[in-house]
Image 1 (cartoon, rainbow, N blue to C red):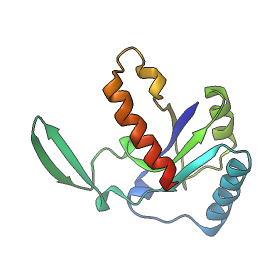
Image 2 (cartoon, rainbow, N blue to C red):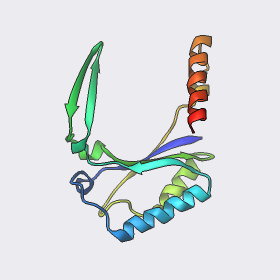
Image 3 (cartoon, rainbow, N blue to C red):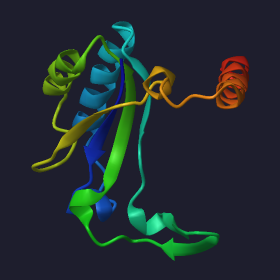
Image 4 (cartoon, helix red, strand yellow):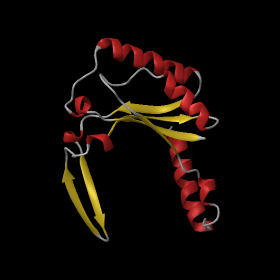
Length: 141
């Protein structure tokens, strides 16, 4: 089972306040454990939303919205992509994580859709195009 693990933003992370070296080392050690366990497939911290953009879709229309974005509690400050046996394993690993922020913080875990989740609506054409994408990604990786 693949899951995305989101480190939720805080006022400090949105202000661009960098962690101390102790937290940076602790998170590095935690990431080492995840990699050694074969769980971590990717992950990074994200810069504040003031440096980001959103693109709003409405039919054929596209509108670019410059950051910062208002609802800090709804923003993501970092992420991991993990491969775990189940949600319980993901929760157990998150509980081992050092607090990723200077103060109170939250981490959210969300399952990733797998192609098998779309079996009831998958057409041969859709399966072919998604297969080509997967093959190209495997070649690049």
